[in-house]
Image (cartoon, rainbow, N blue to C red; front, side, top):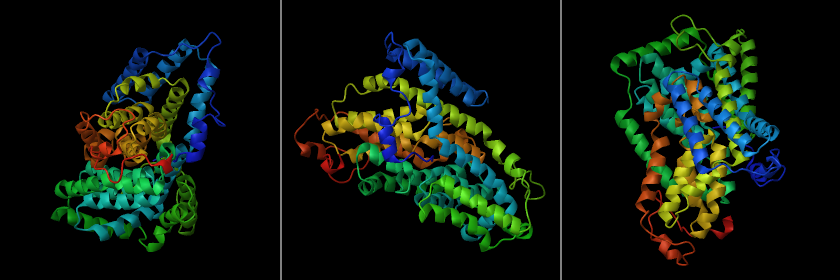
Length: 506
């Protein structure tokens, strides 16, 4: 997952304090605003999504669909009375806010071929083969990714490290790569959503006005059932190496030992990255940068390496050529461009507030608790689908619904969990979302291929919406004084605790 600005900084920006983006009022032409109608916005979104779908269907770069959407909404904003300068500035400011993501992806692009050359990746693979020989590889990939993501708090950080190892093993013996990537994504984005180290988890808590530890415990009520269901599913349907594949795995282990120096010292760069995250509390850019510098130093001391593959990617040769090839900074340029365009479109949405009419229309009949939770989940998913990033999903959905949860006397922790269980956890399943782009770029497996196997990323939204739909007919009017009525109504996803709003979290 991308690193966000600090929660307090984000709140200040959204409330108008030291916000570099001009307000909608100041950006409007003196002749007066012309608010975009719901119909116009809906048509614009429909064309944008259609352009994205066409790009995918015809095998064209996805950013062409996003460029289409950006030009459409830029034209609509100009027609509504916005001037060019603030619109461009909002777009550039939004790109600047994801600079951490762009730098992280660039660093990953350089680290991968470096670790391929210096034996770091080979050592990780060799020790993983020793540890998980005979295991169901999907279960091993899922559980390992959950553990690492809870430590790192980053979905893409987990995918770029432990995920690559399991994908390489699956690829080497002919197992279903898409399933292994799906298992890695399921595990990686469990921590991205739930870990106390996750910047998005902190942002959700800050925007909803809830405490971190309380949210963590509250989210376990939906996390644990899905964790158990996902583990069992991978256990039943995940691939285990056959006898012939096990022999291939043993042969691969021997070949790795013959081609590279397999030693615990090779694990120092990944260990240093973890040290920077856990002990020094640095973000992923600093941690990856430290790992890159250390890897360069150890590579030079160990006999040297080729510098050019860090930019152009490694061209493998020999029996391990298929495994140890690819990546490089230039291979990330398409993904970097895609993220930049998606962020520019997100900045445009934030400035012209074109999604607000749709939100108002979608939530105008909130007569029951079930309606409220169902609308929260659906709007969270919609914003993720349209905006292309988690931050905008959290900001828009959290700020829009928190007062409505107060009116229903519902604990805001349920709002935080609903956002996390829908719009946050589904992001790697959206091809043009920043996270979907990163996963597909790093693993080399398309979003459409691994989507069916990323079980927890679609089970959590499905379960949340299912339980919310069950409560659609159970009416609680706004301002209902009896909190016990709320307690008797089924929660959106296996609730725990008292659902009355916690005054201390306001």
